Image (cartoon, rainbow, N blue to C red; front, side, top):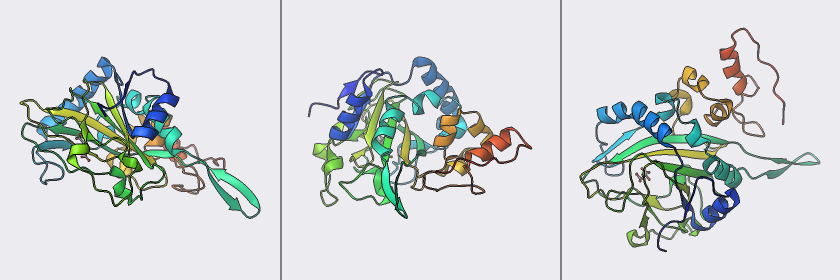
Length: 290
Ligand SMILES: O=C(O)CCC(=O)C(=O)O
């Protein structure tokens, strides 16, 4: 395979989903505009500057990592709700599940949620990260239904020389016994503002940075809402910052109830707790039950 398939930011969602189901990965050009990218650099730059290198071989001893990203900026809405990222994640993961309640056959559609967030800055001399599947975090079996759709937004240019994410296209179809080989992985090459989207079952890893300039990426993982979040967003993001985001993002941050009934608060939709914070004194109102 010559390289990952690339599409523009206005590509057809059906086409993007088809490519993701086939290859497990795709590059969306111009996923974030210059204004968004500049705002993210303003908010994240100081944290990256102040950050020490990671301490272990897996996270990279020449790599700086910053987490709690939704606490550090209020400019992530256009990125996480991009129609091709969120749209593909919803189409791929939110599949109705049939079940019986007594004699009634019903279908429940899971929610999805923001799971992990990180800035990953590879510095000169950082070697290749071991190839891995991110859905291994949830001990998922392969091949199987996708439980994660992840984004790596290029905050600076990604090249083969500076550590552009290494991806093995199609590896989400492999079974659990097949080991990934470095020779099968291809580098993600994309300018700042473009995004790599990949499925949780795809083998990938940070590349080697042989250049003098750092490579900076920002990753957001969307997982099925019935799995534990990789990064605990309730601890990572203060409620005031959650309230600075629109309802769709607040729900993605976990203030949502996954049917048939995970994550409730006072036996209601946890989103109501945020509304109560916004309008103190307003009592919890009954949520529509599934
Ligand atoms: O930095 C990259 O390109 C990928 C990083 C990654 O896959 C990880 O840290 O799990």
